[in-house]
Length: 114
Length: 111
Image (cartoon, rainbow over all chains, first blue to last red; front, side):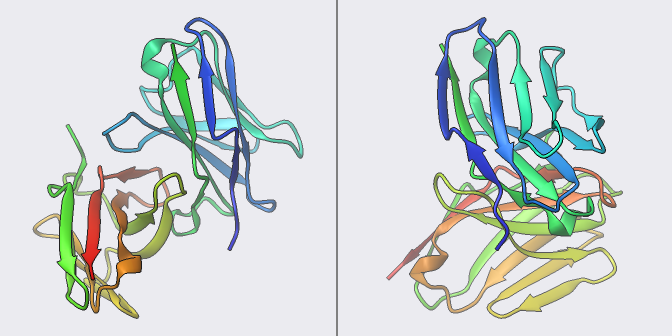
C-alpha cells in the first residue's frame, strides 16, 4: 500500500539546538499532519497543513515549532530551539483529500533531546 | 482530560478465541470511529472504521460495534491468530478534522 517515509528513524540532539524532522508523504497526497507521542502516552495531534498553510494546530504546537513543504520535497517539522520535553516519537501522516478514512502514517522519528 | 480512552493497556487471548478491544470517548460531536494496528517501530495502519450513521461494520474477522448513547465503541477479532499480536489504537474524530487517539491496548495471542 501507500507508504509515508520518515527520515531518520532516530535522532539525538542537545537541548537548545535546532532539529528538522523529515517526512516523505505519499506522492499524490495534499494534506499533511504531525502527531507527537511521548513515551507511555497516546499519540497527540500537533498540526495539519494544506496548500502551503497550517490549517489547524494544537496547544502542543509551540512557537518554537514550524512546518513547511517546499514544492516536491519533504514535509518538515522544525523545532528551534529544542527543549527536554520535546523528546518523543513524531509521526507524520498524509491524506489525498483530507478525509480521516484515507490517512496514512509513517513509522515515526524518535527524537531524544539531551 | 483524555477525549478517547482505552482502559485496558493489555489483553491476552488464546489462539482461536475472540479478542474484544474497547474504547470510550467524551466528545458528542465525534462521528468517525476507527481502529488502527501498530507493530513496534512501525506505522499505525488503519484496520477498520465507521461513521456514526451505522452501529456495526464487519470486515472479515473484524467487527466494529458503535454505541453512541454510551459513547463507546469496540473491535471484535474472531478466530484470533498469533499474527494479530500488536498494539491496537482506537481513534475518533469529527467530520474530516483531526483524529484523536487512545493510548492503545497491547493484544497478545497465545498459541
